[in-house]
Length: 476
Image (cartoon, rainbow, N blue to C red; front, side, top):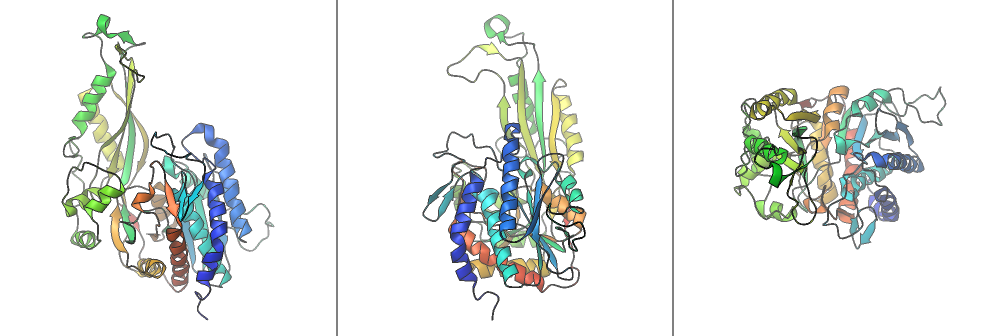
Protein backbone atom coordinates (compact mmCIF):
# COMPACT_ATOMS: atom_id res chain seq x y z
CA UNK A 1 0.00 0.00 0.00
CA UNK A 2 1.26 3.47 -0.84
CA UNK A 3 2.46 5.58 2.06
CA UNK A 4 0.03 8.25 0.85
CA UNK A 5 -3.10 6.06 0.69
CA UNK A 6 -4.61 7.54 3.84
CA UNK A 7 -3.11 11.03 3.58
CA UNK A 8 -6.19 12.89 2.37
CA UNK A 9 -8.31 11.42 5.16
CA UNK A 10 -5.60 12.20 7.73
CA UNK A 11 -5.52 15.83 6.59
CA UNK A 12 -9.32 16.08 6.73
CA UNK A 13 -9.36 14.71 10.26
CA UNK A 14 -6.48 17.00 11.29
CA UNK A 15 -8.29 20.20 10.39
CA UNK A 16 -10.08 20.75 13.74
CA UNK A 17 -6.82 20.19 15.62
CA UNK A 18 -4.91 22.49 13.25
CA UNK A 19 -7.44 25.29 13.75
CA UNK A 20 -7.61 24.86 17.53
CA UNK A 21 -3.83 24.77 17.90
CA UNK A 22 -3.23 27.69 15.56
CA UNK A 23 -5.82 29.71 17.47
CA UNK A 24 -4.09 29.08 20.79
CA UNK A 25 -0.71 30.05 19.38
CA UNK A 26 -1.95 33.18 17.63
CA UNK A 27 -3.55 34.41 20.83
CA UNK A 28 -0.21 34.26 22.65
CA UNK A 29 1.50 37.57 21.69
CA UNK A 30 5.01 36.23 21.20
CA UNK A 31 6.52 39.58 20.19
CA UNK A 32 10.19 38.82 20.74
CA UNK A 33 11.45 42.41 20.46
CA UNK A 34 9.12 43.66 23.22
CA UNK A 35 10.65 43.17 26.71
CA UNK A 36 7.17 43.31 28.22
CA UNK A 37 6.28 40.07 26.41
CA UNK A 38 8.91 37.92 28.08
CA UNK A 39 6.32 35.82 29.94
CA UNK A 40 4.33 35.38 26.74
CA UNK A 41 7.46 34.06 25.03
CA UNK A 42 7.84 31.41 27.74
CA UNK A 43 4.15 30.57 27.49
CA UNK A 44 4.44 30.15 23.72
CA UNK A 45 7.39 27.81 24.14
CA UNK A 46 5.50 25.71 26.70
CA UNK A 47 2.49 25.36 24.41
CA UNK A 48 4.78 24.31 21.56
CA UNK A 49 6.29 21.53 23.69
CA UNK A 50 2.76 20.46 24.63
CA UNK A 51 1.82 20.13 20.95
CA UNK A 52 4.90 18.06 20.15
CA UNK A 53 4.52 15.67 23.07
CA UNK A 54 0.79 15.28 22.39
CA UNK A 55 1.75 13.85 19.01
CA UNK A 56 4.24 11.47 20.58
CA UNK A 57 7.44 13.39 19.90
CA UNK A 58 10.28 13.91 22.30
CA UNK A 59 10.44 17.64 22.98
CA UNK A 60 12.16 20.14 25.22
CA UNK A 61 12.88 23.81 25.72
CA UNK A 62 16.49 24.79 25.01
CA UNK A 63 17.69 27.81 26.95
CA UNK A 64 19.74 30.55 25.33
CA UNK A 65 20.94 33.95 26.48
CA UNK A 66 17.57 35.31 25.35
CA UNK A 67 14.29 33.71 24.40
CA UNK A 68 14.42 29.90 24.24
CA UNK A 69 14.29 27.41 21.39
CA UNK A 70 11.83 24.54 21.22
CA UNK A 71 13.29 21.31 19.86
CA UNK A 72 11.43 18.06 19.33
CA UNK A 73 10.77 15.20 17.00
CA UNK A 74 11.04 11.52 16.34
CA UNK A 75 14.32 9.61 16.08
CA UNK A 76 13.35 6.10 15.10
CA UNK A 77 16.71 4.73 14.02
CA UNK A 78 20.15 6.37 14.06
CA UNK A 79 20.89 4.74 10.69
CA UNK A 80 18.04 6.58 8.96
CA UNK A 81 18.54 10.01 7.34
CA UNK A 82 17.81 12.88 9.71
CA UNK A 83 16.03 16.02 8.53
CA UNK A 84 15.57 19.16 10.63
CA UNK A 85 12.57 21.39 9.93
CA UNK A 86 13.01 25.03 10.97
CA UNK A 87 10.19 27.45 11.79
CA UNK A 88 9.83 30.36 14.19
CA UNK A 89 7.08 31.14 16.69
CA UNK A 90 7.87 34.77 17.48
CA UNK A 91 6.04 37.52 15.64
CA UNK A 92 6.28 41.15 14.64
CA UNK A 93 4.57 43.85 16.73
CA UNK A 94 1.01 44.66 15.68
CA UNK A 95 0.65 48.41 16.20
CA UNK A 96 -0.38 49.56 12.72
CA UNK A 97 -3.61 51.59 12.62
CA UNK A 98 -4.77 49.64 9.54
CA UNK A 99 -5.70 46.58 11.62
CA UNK A 100 -9.46 46.01 11.27
CA UNK A 101 -9.50 43.24 13.89
CA UNK A 102 -7.70 42.47 17.14
CA UNK A 103 -4.28 41.18 16.04
CA UNK A 104 -3.95 38.65 18.85
CA UNK A 105 -7.51 37.36 18.71
CA UNK A 106 -7.82 34.40 16.34
CA UNK A 107 -10.59 34.60 13.74
CA UNK A 108 -11.79 32.01 11.26
CA UNK A 109 -13.65 33.24 8.19
CA UNK A 110 -14.40 30.36 5.88
CA UNK A 111 -11.06 29.01 4.69
CA UNK A 112 -9.09 31.92 6.15
CA UNK A 113 -7.37 32.25 9.53
CA UNK A 114 -6.66 35.75 10.81
CA UNK A 115 -4.24 36.95 13.48
CA UNK A 116 -0.66 38.08 13.94
CA UNK A 117 1.62 35.13 13.27
CA UNK A 118 -0.94 33.09 11.33
CA UNK A 119 1.26 32.94 8.24
CA UNK A 120 4.56 34.17 9.71
CA UNK A 121 5.24 31.55 10.93
CA UNK A 122 2.86 29.67 13.21
CA UNK A 123 0.57 28.26 10.51
CA UNK A 124 3.43 26.77 8.47
CA UNK A 125 5.04 25.38 11.66
CA UNK A 126 1.89 23.47 12.59
CA UNK A 127 1.50 22.32 9.00
CA UNK A 128 4.96 20.75 9.03
CA UNK A 129 4.36 19.25 12.49
CA UNK A 130 1.15 17.46 11.48
CA UNK A 131 2.76 16.20 8.28
CA UNK A 132 5.71 14.89 10.29
CA UNK A 133 3.35 12.96 12.55
CA UNK A 134 1.73 11.36 9.50
CA UNK A 135 5.12 10.27 8.13
CA UNK A 136 6.01 8.74 11.49
CA UNK A 137 2.70 6.89 11.68
CA UNK A 138 3.30 5.46 8.20
CA UNK A 139 6.74 4.20 9.16
CA UNK A 140 8.68 6.39 6.73
CA UNK A 141 12.35 5.59 7.50
CA UNK A 142 13.49 9.11 8.35
CA UNK A 143 14.28 10.90 11.60
CA UNK A 144 12.36 14.17 11.81
CA UNK A 145 13.39 16.99 14.13
CA UNK A 146 11.61 20.31 14.50
CA UNK A 147 13.54 23.40 15.52
CA UNK A 148 11.24 26.26 16.51
CA UNK A 149 12.94 29.57 17.24
CA UNK A 150 11.49 32.47 19.25
CA UNK A 151 13.90 35.24 18.18
CA UNK A 152 13.78 35.23 14.37
CA UNK A 153 11.96 38.55 14.15
CA UNK A 154 14.75 40.24 16.10
CA UNK A 155 17.60 38.81 14.02
CA UNK A 156 18.26 35.51 15.87
CA UNK A 157 20.83 36.99 18.29
CA UNK A 158 21.00 33.86 20.49
CA UNK A 159 20.25 31.15 17.93
CA UNK A 160 23.87 30.00 17.64
CA UNK A 161 24.06 29.69 21.41
CA UNK A 162 20.88 27.63 21.37
CA UNK A 163 22.29 25.26 18.76
CA UNK A 164 25.41 24.81 20.85
CA UNK A 165 23.23 23.85 23.80
CA UNK A 166 21.16 21.37 21.80
CA UNK A 167 23.80 18.65 21.61
CA UNK A 168 23.44 17.75 25.28
CA UNK A 169 19.71 18.40 25.56
CA UNK A 170 17.34 15.71 26.77
CA UNK A 171 13.63 16.03 27.48
CA UNK A 172 12.95 16.51 31.19
CA UNK A 173 11.18 13.15 31.52
CA UNK A 174 13.94 11.12 29.80
CA UNK A 175 16.21 8.77 31.76
CA UNK A 176 19.85 9.76 31.77
CA UNK A 177 20.71 6.42 30.13
CA UNK A 178 18.11 6.84 27.37
CA UNK A 179 19.72 5.54 24.16
CA UNK A 180 18.58 8.33 21.84
CA UNK A 181 18.89 12.07 22.51
CA UNK A 182 16.14 14.48 21.57
CA UNK A 183 18.38 15.97 18.89
CA UNK A 184 20.84 14.58 16.35
CA UNK A 185 22.97 16.47 13.86
CA UNK A 186 20.81 16.57 10.71
CA UNK A 187 21.83 15.44 7.24
CA UNK A 188 19.68 18.19 5.75
CA UNK A 189 17.52 21.13 6.82
CA UNK A 190 14.28 22.42 5.36
CA UNK A 191 13.01 25.90 6.26
CA UNK A 192 9.32 26.80 6.01
CA UNK A 193 9.37 30.58 6.35
CA UNK A 194 9.24 31.93 2.79
CA UNK A 195 6.64 33.30 0.37
CA UNK A 196 5.35 32.07 -2.98
CA UNK A 197 5.25 34.24 -6.06
CA UNK A 198 1.43 34.17 -6.02
CA UNK A 199 -1.48 31.91 -5.24
CA UNK A 200 -1.10 28.78 -7.34
CA UNK A 201 2.54 29.60 -8.10
CA UNK A 202 4.89 27.83 -5.65
CA UNK A 203 8.36 29.30 -5.25
CA UNK A 204 11.52 27.77 -3.79
CA UNK A 205 14.20 30.29 -2.85
CA UNK A 206 17.82 29.25 -3.25
CA UNK A 207 19.23 32.48 -1.85
CA UNK A 208 18.51 35.09 0.80
CA UNK A 209 19.86 38.59 1.19
CA UNK A 210 21.93 39.50 4.21
CA UNK A 211 21.15 42.42 6.44
CA UNK A 212 22.74 45.29 8.34
CA UNK A 213 20.45 47.26 10.66
CA UNK A 214 21.44 50.46 12.45
CA UNK A 215 20.19 53.49 14.33
CA UNK A 216 21.53 56.97 13.58
CA UNK A 217 21.39 59.17 16.69
CA UNK A 218 22.04 62.89 16.95
CA UNK A 219 21.73 65.00 20.11
CA UNK A 220 22.20 68.77 19.88
CA UNK A 221 20.72 70.14 23.12
CA UNK A 222 19.66 69.13 26.63
CA UNK A 223 16.01 70.10 26.11
CA UNK A 224 13.68 71.31 23.38
CA UNK A 225 13.87 74.98 22.47
CA UNK A 226 11.37 77.54 21.15
CA UNK A 227 11.98 77.99 17.42
CA UNK A 228 11.11 81.67 17.57
CA UNK A 229 13.76 82.30 20.21
CA UNK A 230 16.49 79.94 18.95
CA UNK A 231 15.64 79.08 15.33
CA UNK A 232 18.43 79.78 12.86
CA UNK A 233 21.04 79.33 15.59
CA UNK A 234 20.06 76.09 17.33
CA UNK A 235 20.94 72.93 15.45
CA UNK A 236 17.90 70.86 14.52
CA UNK A 237 18.72 67.12 14.79
CA UNK A 238 15.75 66.09 12.66
CA UNK A 239 16.87 68.32 9.80
CA UNK A 240 20.47 67.14 10.02
CA UNK A 241 19.57 63.44 10.19
CA UNK A 242 17.27 63.86 7.21
CA UNK A 243 20.20 65.32 5.28
CA UNK A 244 22.44 62.37 6.26
CA UNK A 245 19.86 59.82 5.19
CA UNK A 246 19.16 61.67 1.95
CA UNK A 247 22.87 61.52 1.14
CA UNK A 248 22.91 57.74 1.58
CA UNK A 249 20.33 56.82 -1.04
CA UNK A 250 18.83 58.30 -4.17
CA UNK A 251 15.15 58.56 -3.24
CA UNK A 252 14.03 58.40 -6.89
CA UNK A 253 16.06 55.44 -8.15
CA UNK A 254 16.65 53.65 -4.86
CA UNK A 255 20.35 53.25 -5.62
CA UNK A 256 22.65 53.43 -2.61
CA UNK A 257 24.99 56.44 -2.64
CA UNK A 258 27.54 55.26 -0.06
CA UNK A 259 30.96 55.25 -1.78
CA UNK A 260 32.21 51.73 -2.43
CA UNK A 261 28.89 50.10 -1.54
CA UNK A 262 28.55 48.15 -4.80
CA UNK A 263 32.22 47.24 -5.21
CA UNK A 264 31.91 43.63 -4.04
CA UNK A 265 28.43 42.85 -5.40
CA UNK A 266 28.51 39.60 -7.38
CA UNK A 267 27.09 40.10 -10.90
CA UNK A 268 23.90 38.20 -11.67
CA UNK A 269 24.84 34.97 -13.40
CA UNK A 270 23.31 33.46 -16.51
CA UNK A 271 21.68 30.64 -14.54
CA UNK A 272 20.14 33.09 -12.07
CA UNK A 273 18.80 35.25 -14.86
CA UNK A 274 17.27 32.23 -16.60
CA UNK A 275 15.61 31.06 -13.37
CA UNK A 276 14.18 34.52 -12.78
CA UNK A 277 12.77 34.81 -16.31
CA UNK A 278 11.01 31.44 -16.22
CA UNK A 279 9.66 31.95 -12.70
CA UNK A 280 6.33 33.37 -13.81
CA UNK A 281 6.79 36.52 -11.71
CA UNK A 282 4.34 39.27 -12.70
CA UNK A 283 4.87 42.89 -11.71
CA UNK A 284 1.15 43.75 -11.64
CA UNK A 285 0.32 40.81 -9.37
CA UNK A 286 3.27 41.64 -7.11
CA UNK A 287 2.17 45.25 -6.72
CA UNK A 288 -1.43 44.24 -6.05
CA UNK A 289 -0.49 41.63 -3.44
CA UNK A 290 1.55 44.16 -1.46
CA UNK A 291 -0.87 47.06 -2.17
CA UNK A 292 1.90 49.15 -3.75
CA UNK A 293 0.50 52.10 -5.67
CA UNK A 294 3.84 53.47 -6.88
CA UNK A 295 6.92 51.57 -8.09
CA UNK A 296 10.40 52.83 -8.96
CA UNK A 297 10.60 50.53 -12.00
CA UNK A 298 8.13 48.32 -13.85
CA UNK A 299 10.34 46.31 -16.20
CA UNK A 300 9.81 42.67 -15.17
CA UNK A 301 13.45 41.56 -15.09
CA UNK A 302 14.58 44.79 -13.46
CA UNK A 303 12.00 44.36 -10.69
CA UNK A 304 13.13 40.78 -10.03
CA UNK A 305 16.79 41.80 -9.98
CA UNK A 306 16.10 44.55 -7.47
CA UNK A 307 14.03 42.26 -5.25
CA UNK A 308 16.27 39.20 -5.24
CA UNK A 309 19.79 40.08 -6.36
CA UNK A 310 20.61 43.71 -5.56
CA UNK A 311 21.34 45.46 -2.24
CA UNK A 312 19.16 48.16 -0.72
CA UNK A 313 19.17 51.03 1.76
CA UNK A 314 15.86 51.65 3.52
CA UNK A 315 14.69 54.10 6.17
CA UNK A 316 12.19 52.56 8.60
CA UNK A 317 11.43 55.48 10.87
CA UNK A 318 12.37 58.85 12.34
CA UNK A 319 12.04 59.45 16.06
CA UNK A 320 12.09 62.91 17.62
CA UNK A 321 10.15 66.08 18.03
CA UNK A 322 6.45 66.68 18.53
CA UNK A 323 4.09 64.21 16.87
CA UNK A 324 0.73 65.22 18.35
CA UNK A 325 -2.06 67.16 16.61
CA UNK A 326 -1.27 70.51 15.07
CA UNK A 327 2.24 72.00 15.00
CA UNK A 328 4.32 72.70 18.07
CA UNK A 329 7.00 75.19 17.07
CA UNK A 330 9.85 73.79 19.10
CA UNK A 331 13.23 72.37 18.11
CA UNK A 332 13.83 68.86 19.48
CA UNK A 333 17.04 68.14 21.38
CA UNK A 334 17.49 64.65 19.97
CA UNK A 335 16.54 62.64 16.90
CA UNK A 336 17.00 59.11 15.67
CA UNK A 337 16.71 57.41 12.28
CA UNK A 338 16.23 53.65 11.93
CA UNK A 339 17.77 52.21 8.77
CA UNK A 340 18.79 48.92 7.25
CA UNK A 341 20.70 47.60 4.27
CA UNK A 342 19.86 44.31 2.55
CA UNK A 343 23.08 42.77 1.28
CA UNK A 344 23.81 40.34 -1.53
CA UNK A 345 26.69 38.02 -2.49
CA UNK A 346 29.61 38.87 -2.01
CA UNK A 347 28.99 41.79 0.36
CA UNK A 348 30.45 41.39 3.85
CA UNK A 349 28.31 43.08 6.54
CA UNK A 350 31.34 44.09 8.63
CA UNK A 351 32.99 45.72 5.63
CA UNK A 352 29.79 47.52 4.68
CA UNK A 353 29.43 48.78 8.26
CA UNK A 354 32.92 50.29 8.08
CA UNK A 355 32.04 52.04 4.81
CA UNK A 356 28.80 53.32 6.32
CA UNK A 357 30.40 54.64 9.52
CA UNK A 358 33.13 56.42 7.54
CA UNK A 359 30.60 58.01 5.21
CA UNK A 360 28.27 59.15 8.01
CA UNK A 361 31.22 60.60 9.93
CA UNK A 362 32.19 62.58 6.85
CA UNK A 363 28.64 63.87 6.41
CA UNK A 364 28.10 64.76 10.06
CA UNK A 365 30.72 63.83 12.68
CA UNK A 366 28.23 64.26 15.54
CA UNK A 367 25.93 61.45 14.37
CA UNK A 368 26.36 58.19 16.31
CA UNK A 369 25.89 54.89 14.44
CA UNK A 370 24.62 52.01 16.57
CA UNK A 371 24.31 48.62 14.90
CA UNK A 372 21.37 46.33 15.55
CA UNK A 373 22.39 43.10 13.89
CA UNK A 374 24.43 41.93 10.93
CA UNK A 375 23.78 38.92 8.73
CA UNK A 376 25.67 37.55 5.75
CA UNK A 377 23.86 36.69 2.52
CA UNK A 378 23.09 33.04 1.81
CA UNK A 379 23.17 31.08 -1.45
CA UNK A 380 22.42 27.38 -1.89
CA UNK A 381 23.70 25.30 -4.77
CA UNK A 382 20.94 24.56 -7.25
CA UNK A 383 20.56 20.92 -8.16
CA UNK A 384 21.15 17.78 -6.16
CA UNK A 385 18.74 15.34 -4.52
CA UNK A 386 17.37 17.66 -1.84
CA UNK A 387 16.40 20.31 -4.38
CA UNK A 388 14.72 17.59 -6.41
CA UNK A 389 12.92 16.38 -3.27
CA UNK A 390 11.47 19.86 -2.68
CA UNK A 391 10.41 20.11 -6.33
CA UNK A 392 8.60 16.75 -6.21
CA UNK A 393 7.04 17.54 -2.85
CA UNK A 394 5.50 20.83 -3.94
CA UNK A 395 4.25 19.30 -7.16
CA UNK A 396 2.62 16.49 -5.17
CA UNK A 397 1.10 18.86 -2.63
CA UNK A 398 -0.17 21.56 -4.97
CA UNK A 399 -0.10 20.11 -8.47
CA UNK A 400 2.27 22.77 -9.78
CA UNK A 401 5.98 22.86 -10.57
CA UNK A 402 7.71 25.40 -8.30
CA UNK A 403 9.80 28.29 -9.53
CA UNK A 404 13.35 28.49 -8.20
CA UNK A 405 14.17 32.06 -7.24
CA UNK A 406 16.11 34.07 -4.72
CA UNK A 407 14.24 35.93 -1.99
CA UNK A 408 14.82 39.48 -0.85
CA UNK A 409 14.38 38.85 2.86
CA UNK A 410 16.79 37.52 5.46
CA UNK A 411 16.56 34.62 7.92
CA UNK A 412 19.40 34.75 10.42
CA UNK A 413 19.03 31.14 11.49
CA UNK A 414 19.70 29.86 7.98
CA UNK A 415 23.28 31.09 7.91
CA UNK A 416 23.89 29.71 11.40
CA UNK A 417 22.50 26.26 10.59
CA UNK A 418 24.41 26.00 7.33
CA UNK A 419 27.69 26.88 9.02
CA UNK A 420 27.27 24.78 12.15
CA UNK A 421 25.82 21.61 10.68
CA UNK A 422 27.53 21.69 7.25
CA UNK A 423 24.26 20.39 5.82
CA UNK A 424 22.18 21.48 2.82
CA UNK A 425 19.50 24.03 3.76
CA UNK A 426 16.45 24.02 1.50
CA UNK A 427 13.20 25.99 1.56
CA UNK A 428 9.61 24.76 1.49
CA UNK A 429 7.57 27.85 2.27
CA UNK A 430 3.78 28.02 2.23
CA UNK A 431 2.85 31.70 2.59
CA UNK A 432 1.35 33.86 -0.13
CA UNK A 433 2.09 37.56 -0.78
CA UNK A 434 -1.49 38.50 0.09
CA UNK A 435 -1.21 36.79 3.49
CA UNK A 436 0.38 39.96 4.88
CA UNK A 437 3.84 39.09 6.20
CA UNK A 438 4.64 41.83 8.78
CA UNK A 439 1.49 43.65 7.70
CA UNK A 440 -1.90 44.45 9.25
CA UNK A 441 -4.68 41.84 9.07
CA UNK A 442 -2.25 38.96 8.61
CA UNK A 443 -3.83 35.65 7.62
CA UNK A 444 -3.21 32.07 6.54
CA UNK A 445 -5.63 29.70 4.81
CA UNK A 446 -6.64 26.07 4.83
CA UNK A 447 -5.72 25.55 1.18
CA UNK A 448 -2.08 26.32 1.91
CA UNK A 449 -2.15 24.28 5.12
CA UNK A 450 -3.73 21.19 3.59
CA UNK A 451 -1.55 21.33 0.48
CA UNK A 452 1.43 21.96 2.72
CA UNK A 453 0.73 18.81 4.74
CA UNK A 454 0.72 16.79 1.52
CA UNK A 455 3.93 18.47 0.36
CA UNK A 456 5.76 17.89 3.63
CA UNK A 457 4.63 14.27 3.81
CA UNK A 458 5.99 13.77 0.31
CA UNK A 459 9.20 15.58 1.22
CA UNK A 460 9.86 13.32 4.20
CA UNK A 461 9.27 10.28 1.98
CA UNK A 462 11.65 11.63 -0.68
CA UNK A 463 14.35 12.46 1.88
CA UNK A 464 14.14 8.94 3.33
CA UNK A 465 15.37 7.66 -0.03
CA UNK A 466 18.45 9.89 -0.21
CA UNK A 467 21.69 8.17 0.75
CA UNK A 468 25.24 9.45 0.97
CA UNK A 469 26.41 13.04 1.14
CA UNK A 470 25.49 15.82 -1.22
CA UNK A 471 27.01 19.17 -1.97
CA UNK A 472 26.11 21.60 0.79
CA UNK A 473 24.97 25.17 1.03
CA UNK A 474 27.11 28.19 1.58
CA UNK A 475 26.99 31.70 2.86
CA UNK A 476 28.18 34.47 0.61
